[in-house]
Image (spheres, rainbow, N blue to C red):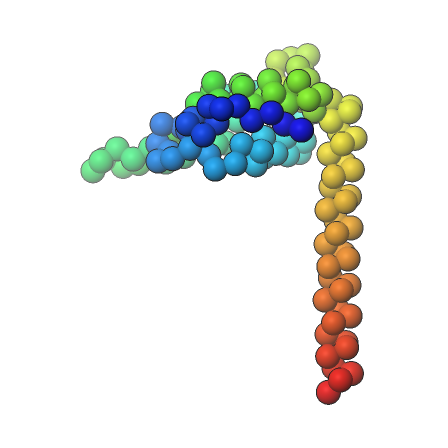
Length: 131
């Protein structure tokens, strides 16, 4: 289970955020998924991913990166769980155990969606038979 710190209620992902992240598990899952789909990902790339619009008053808006500290802490907590590891050229990548776990989770999600679709089709057929 992912340990959620007491500061997770107070910490915002970036300066422009009006409130803190609602669910720390969701953010950690998003980071794990992003790294799962790519080979090596650095902290700067994650900060750019989770950044947003920097509103500058009447001047044009620009992109602003998220806090690198928050991204680093998320990666460190995923490393403690064994999902991520340090890459040889810098950055983080999915470990073998993490790859296995995420593959298992992905197949469970796909199977659950298939079961829901089959249940919906069965209900529709029963409704047509009753009419």
